[in-house]
Structures are given as structure tokens and as C-alpha cells.
Image (cartoon, rainbow, N blue to C red):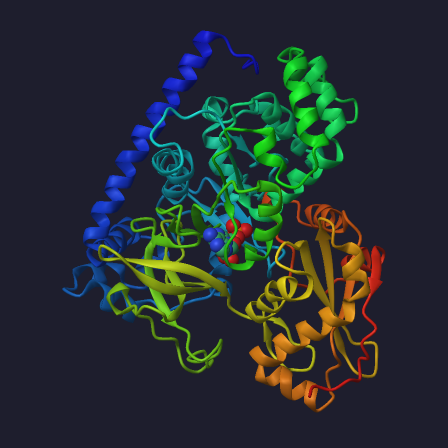
Length: 598
Ligand code: AMP
């Protein structure tokens, strides 16, 4: 069992393994760079491989893959044979796969079912195969480290980092025995024997059921390891949740470091507790250092705790940009890096340039990519009678927005991901993209069609204008109040830092700013406000810890989801979830719901 005080031999082995990973990462990156030299061809080759593998499946026969493969224009022939589809169109086939039927969508062995997006939309389940997981595992396990090694570490030997991923939870099983769980969990499980060579926490911590306990343990092992160089997690809110545990429990953490113990508060099976305790030794010197760092306050705490911390890798762009100020508040200048863009269904982008936050090169080879141009907002070209026209890589134009359509190794053919990206340029001949937003409406109380992007932009712009540049939100969500004569939106905000008093006194101002932003970005909203059919939004400030409580409830409601990946919905519909917010309101705006837009 790995101890946190590894022997010299163990350290040498770990250091060697990290070097091997970095070298392997170089090879994969070189391969990607070569693909970037001839992006369209590489994309076509991926399509050819996928169709060849699956031409004798039921879907492959029904859609004449063999004929497309024989055509001189593979892409056009494929497009003619297979229509663009949404998740619902695959559901019946996926059900058959779950029952254990083979050769339905894919010839490869299905190793599990990835469950996803239970909080952002309807639950989706997609088959998982080795070829499907491979790109994400290669990226997160190797390429990410190599890019960081070049960029943040100046090529120096890499130390360990704190990884906040998890593969806890008993996966559900389908009737045929296929495991249903999160794709990221399946990915890290594959790397199990390697984990303690690259990350500070022992393998047992990644399977801990109780989330607060898991976060505490990653903090404890991280804090014991002064040389920690990075923190890695999927999405930014989870990093904030982890920091919240450290701030709430820091005195216990210091004591555990000092004495080489594990707090009795932790919820752990006895055998796991024993194994973990056996690897701990007292470290009073480090405990004193950690105590001094916490006593100096929470702003900029991370580099005080870890003087060698070089970066925090987590998705902080797109819908998660709202979390940047909060992370920066704690990170005190340590750079944020969004290394990967993907979803359970497919890997889409790789962040090759850490200093260009949110820009990704299309992950050539991970899937076959097409795009639907999104014009003038969400709905152009999306008429139910008109099948959307896709364009290929050559046709992408910088500055324009597109929904990503993929053909994957795991049996999704011309699948509309629902993610809209912005094309920002090229690397060699490969598209460089930014995540923009998820397609669809966030809120539509009075048919005013407010998109997630518009809501997020309104809240993102709010804080600097309302409370100043240094204010930061822990998180936000909304709900629709339809019980009153005039329906209105309620915005729930949780702040971090020291702005509570000023915020409480000026909530009307916040409501007016949100209203103004929505009126400017959404003409239909403006019209509804002007006509008085939609009231002015209400802003409610909720107490610290509210979003942790909401997150915990979402984890319980979605047992097949990876808890580190559950996203706070922009709009809460379930009464039970809205009452978690309502029970913790500190203050609310008084702005009249009847006040119309100017
Ligand atoms: P899941 O299927 O639970 O892994 O969630 C995938 C979703 O997370 C995507 O559809 C995106 O909406 C979002 N996402 C993933 N990576 C990024 C990224 N790098 N930037 C912005 N959003 C992302």
C-alpha cells in the first residue's frame, strides 16, 4: 500500500513513471500535430475507420455504410445515407444494447453505459467501448501532463498533484450486467494502478462514498505534500466545493497533519480507515506551516498553502466562466487552465495552449466531426421540417457559431451534441474553437425564450457593475415564480468574500442590472417586460453553504452521475430544490414585480 511518506525507492519509481507519462504525452501530441497538418483528411480517415468497423452492424447495414465506403466521396455518401439525429433517435437501439444485444450500433464490445447530464437536461445513456474512452484517457493521463510540463514547469521534473476526480459509488447494472456510471469514473478506474504515482492521494480516496469525506481526504493528503504542483478536477464548481471543505475544517486538517491521524468526523468504512491510518505519520512542522497559512486569511490561500502550486486545471470557461472570480480569489495569481473539452458522449477539444484560456484544438481522431451553423440566435435552420445542413471542417468560418455533430466510436452517428462552439481560428489546418453554450432554452416563463447564454451573461456582467471587480460569486441559479399575477424570475446568489453587507443593502440595484442585461440581450424578454406580462426579476441573497446543500441533494437525486461532475442547473424547476434555496435566503430585493421596462 502506498504510504504518504514514500520510501526513496517508491519515490524514484513514481518519478520515473511520471517521466514515462510525459514522454508518452509527447508522442500523442506529435500525432495530433501531424493530424493538424491535414485536418480534413484526418477527419475523413476517422470516419472511414468508424464505418469500416461497423458496416456489418444492424445500423451499418440499414444505412448502407458499405456503399458509402465504396463511394469516391465518402463524406457526401455517408451524409446521404444517415440523417442527423438527436439522442432520442438512438434511444431504442441503446435500450437493446442495455438488454445485452450485440451488433446493434457497434461491432466492438460494449464495456459499460455512460450516464450523463441528468441535471442539465434529460438523462442520457451512451454505450462505452475501449476505443471511445481512449482519447480522453490519453489526454487526461498523459497529454495534459506534457502540456503543463512544457508550459508551467519549464520542463523540470514533474511533482505530484491533487486530483479531485472520483469513481466512487456502486455502478448500477443493466439487466445484461453492463455497468452504468460516469464516463470519467470509468476512465480513471482504468488508470487505478498508476494513480498514486501521479496524484497525492492514495487509491482508496477515489472510491470514498461520502463526498465531504473524499474532499477532506484530498485536502489532507494534498496539504501533507508541500511540493504539490497542481490541482485537477473536471468542472470549476467542484474545486470551489473542495476549497469550502478546507476552509470549514482547516483546524481539524491541521490537527490530523500534526498527529498523523484521521478525523473521527470522516465517514469511512472501518477497513478503509485502517488502511489509510496505517500510512500516516505525524508532521508537526508542516502542520505549523499550514496553520500559519490559514490564520493569514482565505484570500489568496492556495499559493500560501502550496508555494510550488503552478496551475489549477478545471473547466472554467463557457458556462463555468462565472466561477473564475471565485477561483481567482483563492488562487491568488496561480493560473487557471481549462485543458479539455468533452462530454460523456465524445471528446471534442484539447487545450494545447494554457495561456489561451478556453481555446481548444478540435480533437482530431477522437470522432468524426461535422457542424451545423447557428445563425441569428438559436433557432435558424432548426425548423422541424427542414433537416439541418451540416458543414465540414473546410467550411468553418472564424467568428461564426456552430453546433457540433459527431460520429463516434461508440455508436452515435451524426449525433447532435447540443453544444454550440465559436470558431476562432486555425492551428495549422485544424479548427480552433471555444465552447459557447448549450443549445436550448434556460427559461421560458412567458414564451420570452431566454437562453442559458443570456442568463449567464447577465449574471457574469452583474458583479463588477454591482459590487466591484473583486467581488465573487460562489454560484447562482434561478427559478420561475408563476404563483403571482405577473410571473417573474427569481435569481439566487451566493457570494464569497466580504461583500455581504453592501450586497444586502443594494439588492434592488442587482435586480435592475440583471433586468437591463436581459432586456438588452433578448428582444422577446424586453417586449414581455414592456407589455407587463413578465415582472422585474427578484434577487435573493442566500447564505454561505447553500450551493453545497443544493449540490448534495443533486448528488442524491442522480446516483449514476459522477458527483464531481454534477452541474448546478441555471433554472430550478423541482419544488424540493427551490425550497433548498428559499430556506436559506438572507435578504431579497424589493423591486416591484409590476415595474415595466423603460
Ligand atoms: P458531461 O456529459 O456531464 O460530461 O457534461 C458535458 C458538458 O459539459 C458539455 O456538453 C459542455 O456543456 C460542458 N463542458 C465540458 N467541457 C467544457 C469546456 N471545456 N468548456 C465549457 N463547457 C464544457
